Length: 402
Image 1 (cartoon, rainbow, N blue to C red):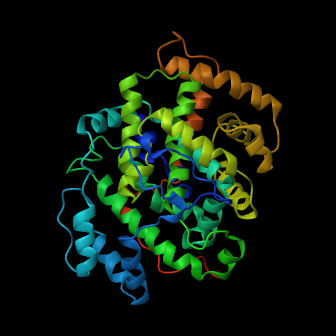
Image 2 (image 1 turned 120 degrees about the horizontal axis):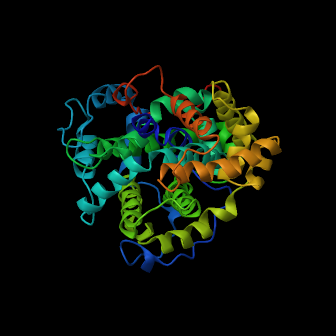
Image 3 (image 1 turned 135 degrees about the horizontal axis):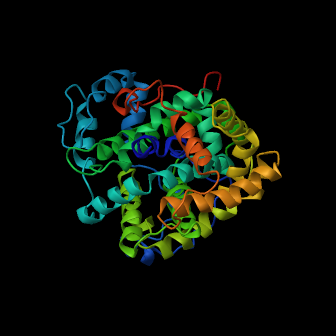
């Protein structure tokens, strides 16, 4: 069970959580003194994209070179591996510069975060999957960007190919030479740059989008808060035991991750207090439903409901309500099941207490919750293939018909 959920951690979150953000751009009032840089330029993150990767990918797409680049990058997996042969010179130069940890990365914290992920993987999976993943469908920019990009036409396939990000991030050696997350983050950064070039060419996306270019630094920050900041708050709310050092290490994991995705250090929160303040400004006010988001949510929950979960669809809906809130569930038009709601709200805290050794005997319903977690973890397994067989690839088009 532990290995199963760890391997699928972030499946839904990765499927939905790595592109885009809000419908209305919040006013930027967050102080850069609370960032890992400690200072800033005064620029707001919604006017910052990726000056290094964007022109590279635009040229590669316009020149028809992306299929060859994807083929060359397919075998590039481990952080310590040399760059593959056959890459265009300017792309190789960029990756040679970008494929490394920032100078402020703390290896001891990253190792502690990896161990924390291993020990708390069940909660993390449920929060990333049924929390962050479903929340992303009510983040308008994110939902629309996902829906109208290439992967939006087949969410199960998208999830199977993109959960690599979460798997690699959660590995014990994620940031070490034998791990794969630094490479995976750089590939994801290239995907984002490709989407920035392609999506504005979609008349359907332009008709609903308020921004001219998707996936700004601000959008990635919103995604970080729907993942890392949200999960941290829920772990505290659920009273999952954590030391102060573990909390700090979990934040550091995300600080390094979003740096590798191209977010400027002046925007990356230095502490959980700073992250909570930034989240309250840029995430909470912009949550709202969209036509695209509703369709994505129903598709994902429909795929989940097709499994033998050992629970009803009402139980699944009520678990989403429990992890998120009634407002979001109502936006997504999830029917109520009050008997299931009672079971979730009493059973899940007892499930956590038993897993953490705070109850001597497994509570009633424990094994139903265990089956529920296992079944959802299997949802996007992609026929048992390993992460290295579901590579991150740069898109060459938008959603068919878009």
